[in-house]
Amino acid sequence: MSSVFSQIINRKIPANIVYENDEFIAFMDIVPIQKGHVLVVPKLEIDNIFDLPPPIYNGLFSFAREVSIAMNKVIECKRIGVSVIGFEVPHAHVHLVPINKADDVNFNNKILTSKEEIEIISKKILKELNS
Image 1 (cartoon, rainbow, N blue to C red):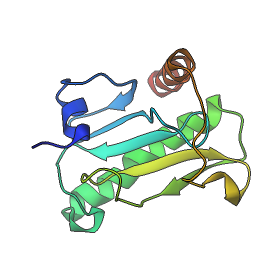
Image 2 (image 1 turned 90 degrees about the vertical axis):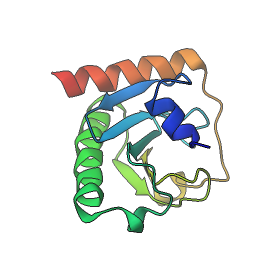
Image 3 (image 1 turned 180 degrees about the horizontal axis):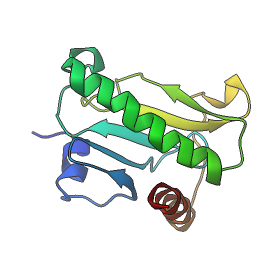
């Protein structure tokens, strides 16, 4: 069975997509740890990030960099934190999290964010990426 991320990539389930190209997709986390939490995912479904072919691995981080620059322009924070954990979904992915201190990247602290707020932030990031 395909991962939930593959289902998002194939438009079988909805997501607030922030940015996309032929190899990668970025979308809002629906259970964020901070407002503006984005997931960056290769379209190639491989569980462990270190098993990605080198061009995809390198491309993933270049794509994540591009998204994080846009995030930093539209979300008030000191920086965009990066985390790769890999247990939640068996599909390699990178978490981009707006942070002001190291403790802001605590996956035990989910925050309540409305679907509307997630959509607004998503549109702001997309607008910045398309400008």
